[in-house]
Image (tube, rainbow, N blue to C red; front, side, top):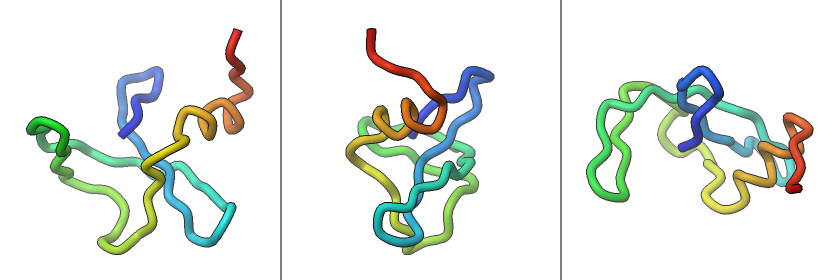
Length: 65
């Protein structure tokens, strides 16, 4: 789960290898390391779990300083 500048939440999904898209999610609650969603990608959708920071940088032109 990632946060947009406006506070909304999203994740990256991968419909096929080396292709990534932002997908809006709405969080119901967070319990420890688990987020329970009100809405988001369909069950079974491949979701990025490692490397999201790099995808944000690539998608939005942000680099480490």
